[in-house]
Amino acid sequence: MTKARIRVYTVPGCLDCAAVKALLRQADVAFEEVDVSDIPNSREALALLSGLQSVPQVYLDGRFIGQVAEVRHLVMTGRLSRLLADRS
Image (cartoon, rainbow, N blue to C red):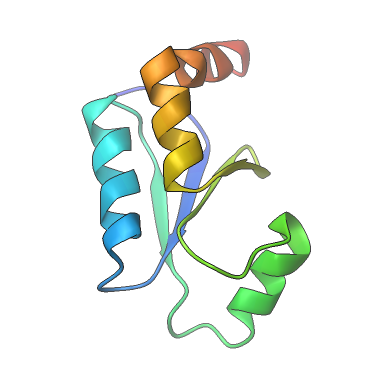
């Protein structure tokens, strides 16, 4: 798997969260999952970083790169692979 600093913020039962994790696995991208369901004020903290309170949220080296639609686009166009290569 690709060594990278991808972090995915999720909650249990979230279909988009499952979809983004599946996309990353299919692309052979290593990621850390952070379940924010039990973290107080986590949605507010995410909003400060990305402007969004919804999950999933995907970050590369601490930089917000999108939610499921954006990550799907990055994977399908090969751009995610290039971003990971640029940061390795």
